[in-house]
Image (cartoon, rainbow, N blue to C red; front, side, top):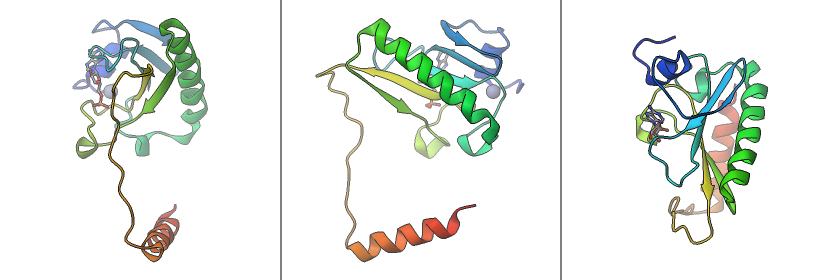
Length: 138
Ligand code: AMP
Ligand code: ZN
């Protein structure tokens, strides 16, 4: 537990939440400021600030939790679709430094615009970057 972390406090039941899921390792609750109603957060109970800090052994539990909760959100809200979002560090929009996945129910015509997409100057530029990323794999 990180004493400065709001999500650790929710896990420890020091702060209330609208809980929708709990397993031995993961917790799911509604986001207090939903993009659409039913917007849920799923997180490991242990404090890992970002995706890069989470032990890979937790991945199966996390993915199972996301799958169950997202299906339940879809059913309960009658959503037409659903986005899974996960922000790492402040420049990427992470406000709470305790790893969490956003499950956002989507409705036809809800008007939510995700992001503008760009392009590469050339196929070579794209291939070079792909090669650089492959070489950085650990
Ligand atoms: P992020 O920007 O990815 O770190 O997302 C943090 C999310 O946590 C935001 O969407 C907030 O609305 C949400 N949030 C912050 N405090 C609470 C809380 N006490 N209960 C539920 N959701 C929260
Ligand atoms: Zn935490």
